[in-house]
Image (cartoon, rainbow, N blue to C red; front, side, top):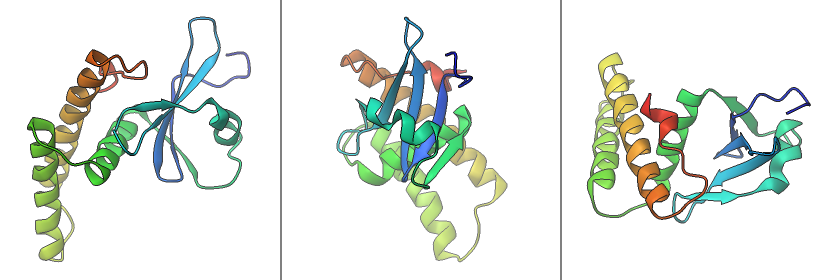
Length: 143
């Protein structure tokens, strides 16, 4: 990109995870997590709003933070059966216990949650890729 924007770049846009990735021709595509499915929805109309921080509630994230945000978002809005949802429930149980005990998560609990979310991100993205979602990127958290 000639405007100095380093891609890929990751954001929270009004609480929703958004990534901007480079296209093969040197352009950019904007992908936002779709609240109904957890898949990626192309939202190129957000490019200027996000890159120029128009409107306020826009936060830049590292790739690692982005993975965590995506999985927290998916776990909050989606429900279902299978191993991914069982892992989401495990995270919820850890967080619920800390809340019930009126305490912060321990460093061990935080590390466990980070690891689970990294794993569920890869699993979810692999399923999306297998289903043909062009925004899927399991490699983002695989490393």
